[in-house]
Image (tube, rainbow, N blue to C red; front, side):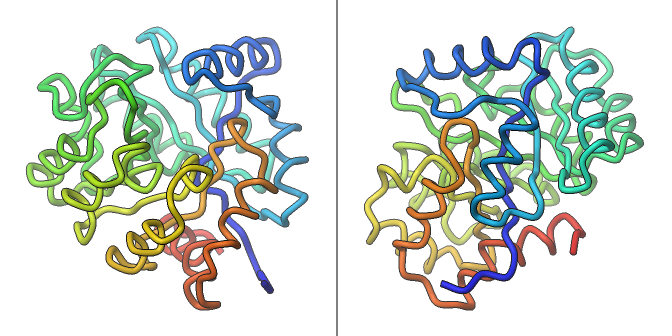
Length: 264
């Protein structure tokens, strides 16, 4: 398959001093061995093997006091790497949400990353409403979706939020709900929401993946790897096996993300 460009919409990075510990903690949560390091250099080396030219990088604040430090780290990483586009983080316990959203924008970050399970909230909790109000029509939210044991990031919960905030731009990771793909089809397919492909194609049936893409629209699907959960080569090989058309591949691999984030 001839590819002109690739934008990875879903990549995690951590400061060198905590990267190993952070990656180990994520692997322990999912009961999986993480194949990659979570450092900037490791990300670039992994992406280079498939020709990634832009990475959307982020990290998640599991504690309120981490929010500003993580946003500063992401902004510094973007400033040092021309191939990076940064997403900031927020936390429902953070007191000055609007002020931090304004600061995130001033830092040049292009979105927000949230993870319900790691951050201890449900998508439709009342405490989340100030975040949605603050970012609506300003920044997209990349939301982790789906869990085998919890419903805090379920497609049904996100559907409620989309109804309440029609101007909210959401990227629902993992085809709208890891291991909840039937609910993703029921509650999210066809709605005004983007899906990313990350951490799904190793498990999601090819026919069902194609069904989701075609029913939802290839113009609302974004390629992502969830690095360092997976290497870029592994995720790209899985994506290639879908057998999409050239036009669909171009939309998903870079054109949709370019349009959404205003990058070339």
